[in-house]
Image (cartoon, rainbow, N blue to C red; front, top):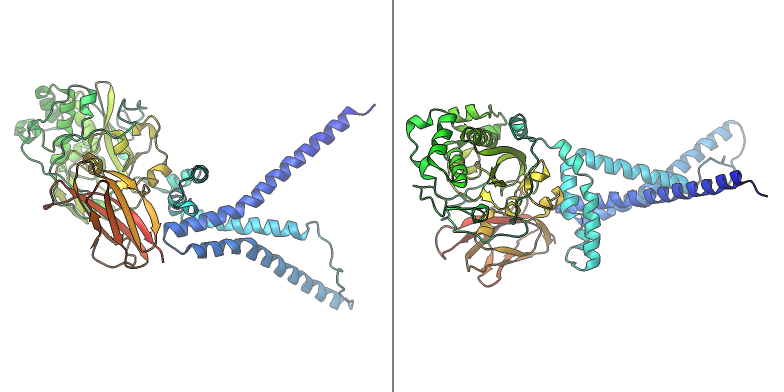
Length: 530
């Protein structure tokens, strides 16, 4: 009769060895692939030559590891020859001492070492760009393919990219987050908005656009208030955007009612019974009375952003608008909270920068609003006042085009976007959807082309479109923005002939009339390769 103990240990040992060998094989196989993937994705993102990234990948394996092994073997033989010469003996082929590791073992270990150093160095020196590159262009080798196999590979590729989000978040600083950490409601966990996150809503009346400002979205003219369509329920409030006119109470607020935050809030609460229009009035006050402190943002010397300082100075960055609106809401009996996160405008990259905005709970449902971006526009250190309502009660799916809160639940979506999904979205503004447009292709924030780029845009309202391209980030491609050809059809077709290799931003502008001012509605990044 056999010995069960010994037999069991033998089987267990065999299984453990098999598992270890399998894990080791996966590590050995995937590490070089990760190095090539990271390098080539960064090259695609920065419009570098893909062939150079692939050549670098070949250097990571097998060129560098094998070269390292051959060099080490030559050095060992040379040292051995010197020792034998000193001992007055001869070195014969095969006379070299045998080590514990075989040649294959050493090549594998050297491959791991080379690739881990490369990957670690890439992540340590370019953590933000590495994550953005993997999240937006990690599937560059599948560009142009829409079959099920390619879609499955994309899903796995971007799943792997999402695993690096912690590093991206760790190195990014939102200087405005701290201003809202101690405010009431900062730790709330909201429920998704009802009936507005599964698609794009039918837009309401669109305000007249004014010229877009460099470095920000378009703005809309303010004026004497007509209250517009009065929302009667959560569903009617989702009819967005509201007319771009200040609430009548804000436009004609008595001086004695503007002595303090409390006096403003009490006056508005006493004279506006509709909960939606009350929040609009509070929002309008912050958007209209506060000027954006562009100089402070550019210099990095940001003054206090508490509500009292903002109210007194009438000047702040986004955190001041958001803290003031939260304070006005509290004083008026409205539930308005401070929401920090990242946001992107046409003057920024795909990841955007730190920002702060608000959410308001009305009749049991949450709504999103950004008084900062509704107050006007910025060009360098100059702020130009221009009230609008693009970011007032904006449907969550549209608000998430350019706002990514730190806490995913504040997206108010049943299925919140990952950061990678946010980065891959084309940089369309709310105005793009408010005018009925839909981007049919391309559907990514950045694409690579050769010589030209074509866009197709659903245009059911027959709006007029203009498109232009210009060099991005100081790259090659010329100076002044150049016009693209736009075919006014359904769908509308945009064709841009790109003059040279480089990185470009293709920007879209729209208007209801053929002539007049066209407002900015979105952009795409385009890498033109030879």
